[in-house]
Length: 169
Image (cartoon, helix red, strand yellow):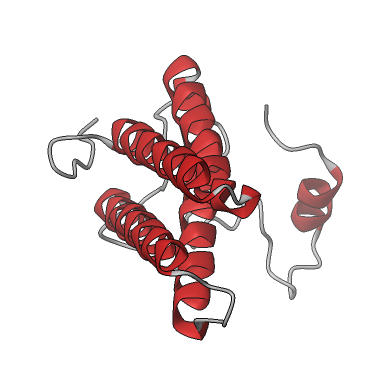
């Protein structure tokens, strides 16, 4: 399977790199300023590192772990941007720098995640899409799949038997 690469890194590797940078950012600014709230980037970084490790250990759950990392990067982007743009009176220049760097790191990962999703998307609507791994049994069905999804107008015995039988395993 051909995977998306950003700066030569696939998404789990990029997630680990940005997670490490976020963790270091939070620790450095916590030591510098002494404020516990400076550890927010570290919290996002820990979750991103854990999701990267989980993706490496269980490739069949890659989509789940990468969605967790996207949630973290989106949260970091939103929190950093909103805090940076509001610029409350209690905000120091160190906090402004930290929020700016956190927003840039989160935005970079979020943009790469969207590009990775688009790279892995099928070119046609009829193609079967599998999320993250080739042996995933939970594929999104094609739009012309009428066996599992009978039409509302089908009242015959075939539709009834399809609706009453359990799905294939």
